[in-house]
Amino acid sequence: MVRGDGSGAGGVDPQQLWLSPHRPRRGRKPAFSRAAITAAAVALADAEGIEAVTMRAVAARVGAGVMSLYSYAPDKETLLLLMVDHVSGELCPPDPPTGDWRADLKAIAHAQRALMLRHPWLCAALSSRRWSLGPNTLAFVEHALAALRPTALDGGAKLEVFSLITGFVTGLVADEIAQAAVSGAPDRAAAEARYLAAVAADGHHPELAEALAAPRRPLTPDATFARLLDRMVDGLDTGPRTPGREAGG
Image 1: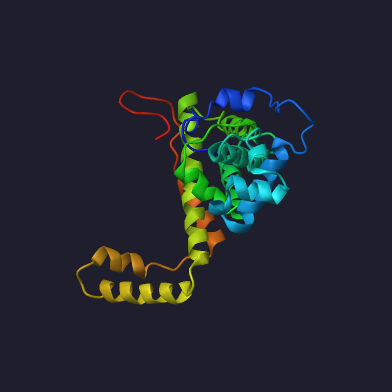
Image 2: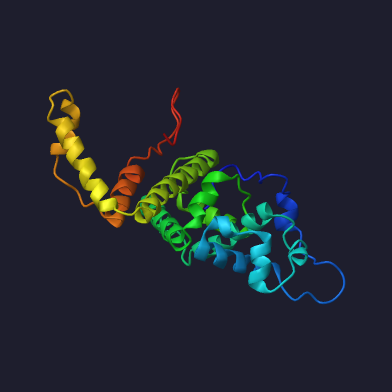
């Protein structure tokens, strides 16, 4: 679910964050856990958006003092990393790849879309920051790479394909969420359609006129996503490398 090279965000040390067991400060037994605080932050983002997630707001949600949270997440950037990996746990596939890599890639994309629709803040989070691959995210990346094993792609190209699919899903879902939030969207769409029809009829845009004259396709978000995903995945080039040509398209 993470885009980018996994080198971490800001000053966060990914090895320390993900591989070193979390040890709260010495003293009384802690009243909370990092997982509980992360879950509270996710619930807050789901309800009010990513902008609502502050250390103070999360502390209030769990009934803790703000300073006590810093032993679990030293800053908001770390908390956001934890949140992304937390929800990525919902992606963990129950079954191994089928061997049909195109079908498996499409299933991966549909799972990502469903996750982003359940957590609308996730698109903005993935698009605006560099992310570190936590354990839940790594499990899903491992599944995606296994799904691509039947192809002739090398390891780097497989990672590029996974990044391409994730970016594709993120962009479409972000647009879907934005359109759903706009009041009067159907009226605006109808007005835009009338405008384009008028432009197409002026004789100066023959290619546009031909495109608009084509049979209409279903425009529901589900149908549009499935249609564009088919076009992308079915068009991927995963043949062997040849001189002057990169595998993976």
